[in-house]
Structure formats: structure tokens, C-alpha cells
Length: 175
Image (cartoon, rainbow, N blue to C red):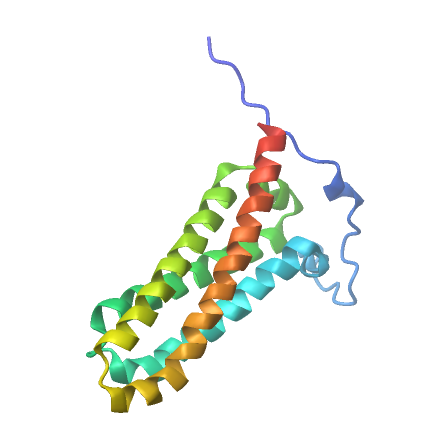
């Protein structure tokens, strides 16, 4: 005989005021999520991820032949994390239950952990390849342009790591 699955939903979701901002055009949007701690962290991940993606795409494409095997994975990881985090924000804004259901599931923990380690490995590899394979004349130019991207990705990795830790705590609380 199968037992039914029980999903526990925190009561905090009901305590958050609905449509607390002045943009109350649609009752289904929860724009107040953006001002919560989770919302601010997610928005920070998206903004920093987009900046990192932009820097690598804008200034790294010229050197992609020289740094080849590190450029594509870095760009792919930045795109993947940006899109997945954007999708999570969309789900959280549309549904207050999604915040609690996704946050207490293993998905958020695994995604944030994989994103943190992916960013760490990608920025380490990109930094190694830039210093190892670019000629000294191009190294200074590319460092000025690519260096902010892999330093920024280190901060993004820390943010994803912090978010993974918080997600793990929530996951352990309900399982």
C-alpha cells in the first residue's frame, strides 16, 4: 500500500503581505518577494551573473582561440546559472507556495551547490589559462578585460555557496 506524500509549508508565507508595493496591477504577482532576504540574494546572483557573462562575452571573444578550452565552459556556466536563477525568481514572484516548496526541496540545495563549485572551477581554470597561454603582450590587455570577470565569479560562487548552506538548513529542517 502506498503512503501519501506530505509537503510541509511554513506559515511564514501567509505572514508576508500580498502586493505590498505600489505596483498592484496583477493579484497573482508577489513583487514583495524582491525585498525579502531570499529575493535580494537571488536578484544579486542574477545581476552579478549577467555582468560576469557580459564581461566574458564582450571582452573574451577576441581571445577565445587562445584560451579556447576555458572560455566556452565559463560562458556556459555563467549562462546556465543566470537562466536557472532567473527562472527561480519568476516562479517565486508568481507563486508564494513555490518559495517554500522549492526552498525546502533538494533542488535548491543541489543547484546552488553545483553552481558555486562550477563558478569556482570555471574561474580558476580561466585564470590559469589566461596566465599560461596568452602571450605577454596580450596578457596585460586581456587581464584588464577578463580579470574582473573571474574575480566577480569568485564572489558569485561565494553567494551561491551561502545560498546553498541556507537551502541545506531549510531542507534538513523539513526532512
